[in-house]
Length: 184
Image (tube, rainbow, N blue to C red; front, side, top):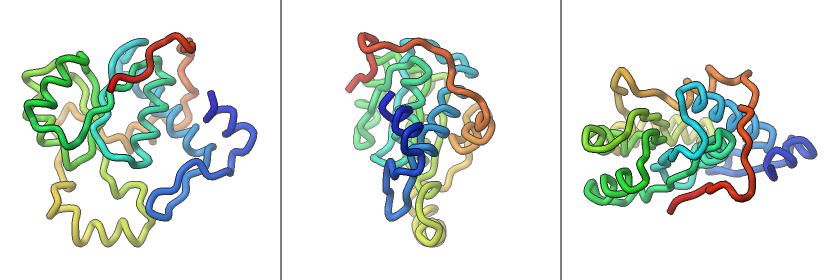
């Protein structure tokens, strides 16, 4: 509600700064609404766990607020976990959906058959970098550091979902202060 209220009262106010690029509260609200709508459309229901496997970046906030707006519970997963630790975490949280940074995609794909993961949503760190940094990242780091991937047929890009559901209103899922929100 704080993000929604601030987006209404001060839509152009800066919500986050990432490597010099700014995102307003209005944009954070719009993107997290779109992500929430995409989750509901994919079958995510209230109290479902949605894993987030990424560092602090704009996509992690978009996803976190989107999961909450869809009534889900965020399962924040440490990107430094070994495969064994990741597998244990995914099973323990009963995670069926995960948003993953591209550099961790192949690790998650290798674990998918041994977990309840049904939906994998990938995102590239460069998507919210300032234009020059994004260009330089593409030239010098993306392939070398494992960020350039090819998605398997059933997996999705976060950016595609945000575009597809851009004009879809926030789902009407009742969420209250006593609902669980986060598993660490």
